[in-house]
Image 1 (tube, rainbow, N blue to C red):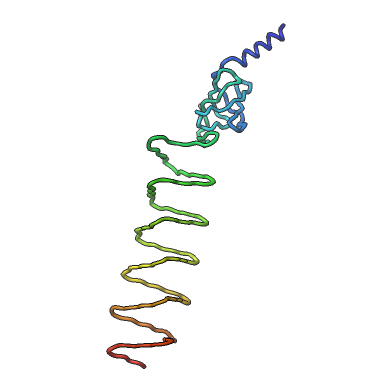
Image 2 (cartoon, rainbow, N blue to C red):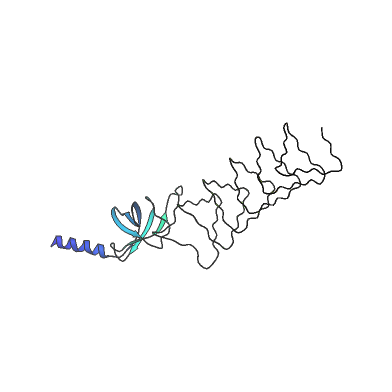
Length: 219
């Protein structure tokens, strides 16, 4: 009779509603946690509304109609030196029907296997910016920039374009070794002064070589 009474008390305790504070003993994965509950243990799932991911040692609030149907519904206390992680099991979307801001007095970092941004308009403002990538590609209809100084440093520069147009007040080019130019037609015109000089200069033509000037000096 005593044994039967003990079993009934145990069954009654399991069926009783629960709403108490516990300590996270272990993260069992897939949203399940092992809790230290007044000297005993309890296994329960994290409620979907509990966005702050519980960590071992956290003080949490457990509630439910029974111990078998209890949920970890909130994280109450945590060591302030530990990083808080917000997330849910599965996919998550943030924001609905209004503006969303992410603010921080310190650094903000985003880490992901893949990151994509889609927007009708994108604006970036910073005192300085650094992009590091093994491969960087840009596709668009038009690119326009206004810079005080533009510097490129690299091993090779290749461009494949239908048309190139450059306008400058002063232009300097310096080639240490060989400068090759191949063109169907070549037209150079100087408004004031034109000078070609080299240790060896050759001008050849297959059909016609013509010089026209008011004065021609050779030698």
